[in-house]
Length: 111
Image 1: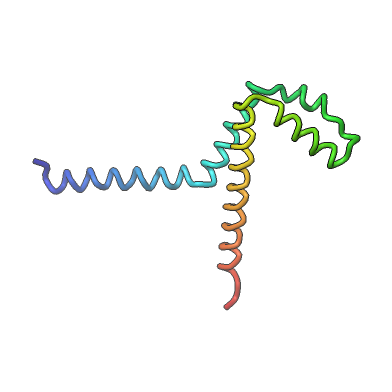
Image 2: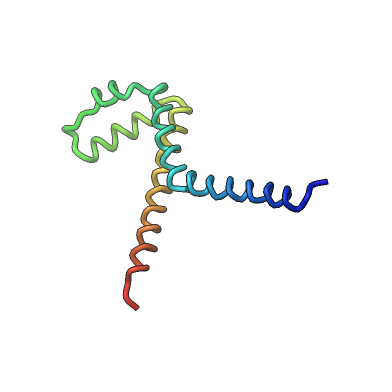
């Protein structure tokens, strides 16, 4: 049977661990790391150098969008999943940054 001091030490170790994990692995950093990992993983499926070489920038914005759409739709399913994951996590990260900025600016607003 554990003594109260041993129980307290055990509980406090768990609390310190949770505090550390929440501060080191906050939602913004997790999303940023996932975007980087997905981007790194996509290089094993797609040759970014060749995609940029085939990209015709003379078509303007609509031509670029059409090229990117065609490039993504004509790839393997895994590449499409990786691109979709990068887009989703980028959107979530942008949303979190905007919400955090809104909260911090409201803190400095005079009442």
